[in-house]
Image 1 (cartoon, rainbow, N blue to C red):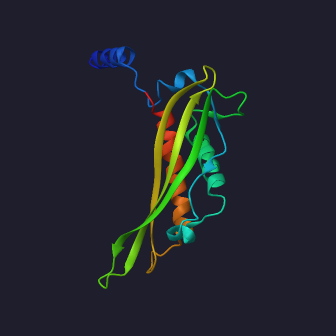
Image 2 (image 1 turned 90 degrees about the vertical axis):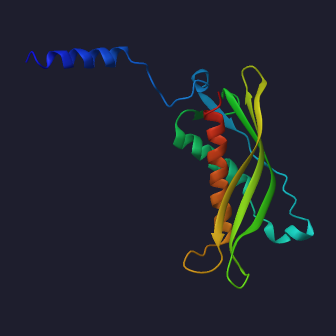
Image 3 (image 1 turned 180 degrees about the horizontal axis):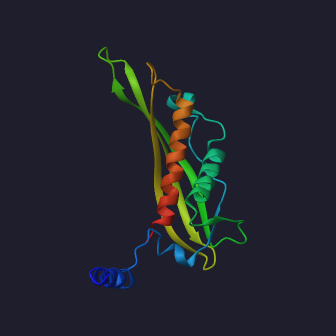
Length: 174
């Protein structure tokens, strides 16, 4: 028993005197709730080169995904506009689709889609802007082969990526 006593003492000293480490943000300690305002869709789908890029309700899907990510993250509760500590406003400003990979015959094999949003985080108690950022969500999709998917499903994945990045920017802000 005596030979283990020094180890027990060292263990107790290390565990009681060690520095605390957490993955929680120090920024979030002063805030408990967040409200995600309906996103505005300012993507110009009427331009000649973009007529095939229209995705109905993309702004609704984006807002829903951002709220879902906050629920999944758990650091902030989603609340109403009147009771929330933080307010997120977003404007979808652009959508791009570009060739990412080609076949040997120079046919497009894979596309990358990107959804761009200007996002503002406001402190609703002090009525001030905490930050304003352009955030990009992206995904890719194959148009043929065993990995083929639709552009619509790639847009949904890009919106999920956009929502994840927005929530990370809020939670990890120092």
